[in-house]
Image (cartoon, rainbow, N blue to C red):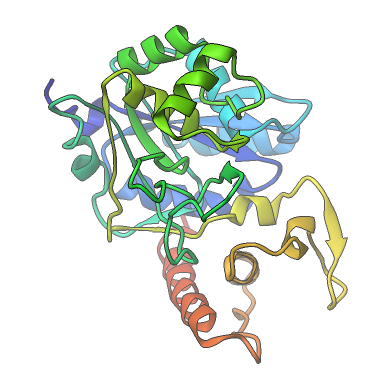
Length: 318
């Protein structure tokens, strides 16, 4: 199997709620650094957002091949939205997707596509800025989006940027009765037993994790590779368009998951990025790092501040 040319790949981008207004600039950076085509997948987006996507796509019809609304009335899980695309569209030998909060600073598709050889049928990427490591924590009940590896080195892969050999993906999904949206409770006995045999049984899994595990059960290779050419904020769509809000200490609305605890830095980095992106796009000064921010998180915030300023300067006018 030879590596695919990047111009032959179609990346599916799932847009939720009203995030297209601001996150389109991230995708503009991706288009600037690859030759691949894109499909915009609307998921729980109001009609005016879908129309904005269509106008933006029409202006780039050589790169954005379609706006596909897979769930006009409600926001479904990321993997469910992607699975609806997989069942409705055939883009050839590969199925690919990428998050809309990934900034490209250089060529990123060809280095990943080059790994799809010698039995490797899936390549993922996209480590979050705020993540210190991507290992499943000890005694954790699930495999979250940011968990790319088991503690034994098993590759669960990333749900943020992925390239799949379409035939292997379809075959494994059909054999085990799973999909990119399979989360764990929906598994039948055979699939659950196989994961237990592999030592990779959990209560719940994020997008693509089960498929990636069962691809390996079928004898295929799955690879995760992070690249310096891309910067993935992580959680930005959930911050800009969460399904439920609470009122923060400053009186502003923020996603309820901001108060759940968990990964240090995720909320701070996503929240700062959202505020910086809105401010700069609206012609206002970017926010500063809040007083009392721990040094490690402050460094992450300063980094995304520089990246967002560069993003807006380069792509907002287009």
